[in-house]
Length: 605
Image 1 (cartoon, rainbow, N blue to C red):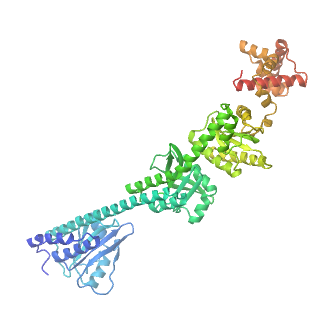
Image 2: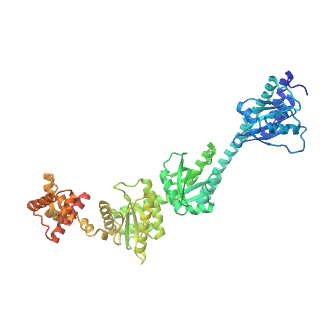
Image 3: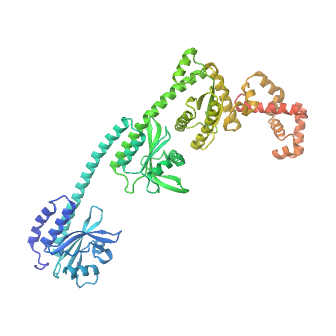
């Protein structure tokens, strides 16, 4: 072999042949084979190879070799970076030259192989490109003789490496473009298949499993109309089988997921949030992409996706949009059916309560078409979810409406759920022996559901039994009165009129002249005097009665000296003739005070 330093013009003319050889294939492995062959053949080296460098793993791996005299004995294909010059070449981005590998102790691995294979001079050249796994690569060339590597020789090798890097990058782009095109075609085909599945009335589990296969991520489809959760695959942080994961979502864990979805549902599209779950006594924070599913402006569910470490590409986002659209269509039918049925029921109930009907036969016929027998004995159950006078948002009200409608049908298929004003109203037939028991069960489950969704207890009131469309307004007024009274008294839970003692009866006639006359004749002068003079005699009287007419206890509660309290009580007797010496007189005063307070709270004063 001629000396390596003797590079003439013919080497540079041979670059045309090198470029043609390297570019003769679009396969990455073939390009690397041609690159090593070209470097050995045109630069007059005896053997060579390409190595990929995995710095995280700490090894250099041989990707391809060229050695026309390769012996049959096995060669080492994996080198510790600590015994290889490859890392040094990459770090400095300069070639490393070992003049005589058989004599050099700097790289023991090379020395052993050099003796075994008979090569002497070694050049390790950084390639400034990466393999298909993203690892940096170096070209190694070996000579059987000890040679002096000149600058022109290095420049020639660098040019060959540069041509190879161009070809490698080109091949990777072509492969990426081809893969993108294939995936785009698959995405379009998947979208078509997904919509066919949905439009053929496929079930939510079948659609969810198809989406899981397309996105290649663990997902949970949430149908808020049916309170149903369907999972496909298990997040990698969860140590469960798919069957155990789905069973857990059907139990208490599912409610936790729904609560988390509700709290995170307003996150920006594409924003990854933390889904915090408790599993087997341990809390997990799972990164999750929660995408709302909206139909006609209403949130009907969500798609929860647990992203891969590699992130989302544009095609992944396209698939995600297709999945969201498919699930929205899947849930649209039940949502639209529910809204339509509820609108008809709500309109009918409003017409009956507001007495806007004239023909009893017509209203009865229309009600029967909606599953209501207005002539049969029934009770109204009215539910108020407002907290401190603040009504629910439309989305939360709709969610509760859907879930309570489903619960009512589970308790008794004959119970009809609808809405009126800002309340959910149930028409519960009482034509069977078990009807009252089922009503109690429904009240309990209404409270449980509201506590779960709102973390607060609603007001659930039950009217007396009635029958006939003409009695619906009175039943509703009874429910409405109890809701107002419970709200003013700060009471929440399930009630009937009996739970409010005499006040519900008395206040039902609070607009009667007799009630107002009773208040005026009993404590009216005290109220008028306080208004005119800025005094608080009615408050003193109220507190004194509340404390059982005990001077010291009342004075302590009001922060007064007992002598001051006695003076005020004396003035009440002098100015207004107030007597509290008998139980009947004390009851009369207390009743008047309570009725007056209730009238004021209800805006009737």
